[in-house]
Length: 353
View 1 (cartoon, rainbow, N blue to C red):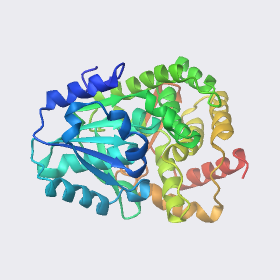
View 2: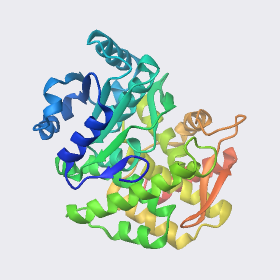
View 3: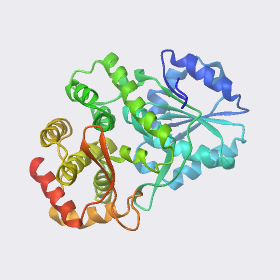
């Protein structure tokens, strides 16, 4: 375990039992969604402390990451007599860990929670780093707080339950971590065979990816500076995600980030001279594995409006995290509206729209 409470488990049940014992809760609650209740909860059997746990189940999918679901979790905690000394275990993907962490962080002004991420995206991104949130008013993660989990337990055996799309969704965040770290890590990620998963190798890659994020979060937990590097691909990626929701054709977060990386590497190339050959290699990898997000020039204005709502902005100016080169960060960058529209043109051309 590192000093951030993130554990890449060798013996998952032992680590969970230890974490519960350290918390010494008066009551224990387990939050799942409909999918993880069926697919993942059975893997927790055999832990004595969980035999008396209260179970809270919510709907699956990002569409349920809203204030109504949050209110239902608060209500369940209240109805079952949760106190400030209770513990909430969040078992699920990023939606469950984001919403569950927010519920725990605000109930009784904060109770302890443990994240057990069950998707690759949650393991390398959502469940790690202390960000909690719900969607609000049609915007991603609009309401939330910074509050680290007591423990984050990474059990990569859960990844065997994932379909290809959800595995790829998480892998996009790993690709981002490779871009902001070093060439060795990036090259290893670009060479990994996503069509024939080696789960032992994937476990090692997950460990490296989490270390990249945790090293950054330790230095900048509240995103005042360095942590903004983790937003590479997200300014435009979140706009794609919001457009997809607006048009009732939702996409997985990681896919939106991958498509956002295409755009933001182009802006990096134009604005701060990110190497063209590296940009092309990454774009080829994304095109081959993630396909294309379809939109037209008629959508540019709405996409731009979504970017204006990004939480990283200051004074109404869109903020980008860019790269001079792999591992060479350029934070707090801006782009004109014309450059952003040019970038959307580039995306549509190189992605075959």
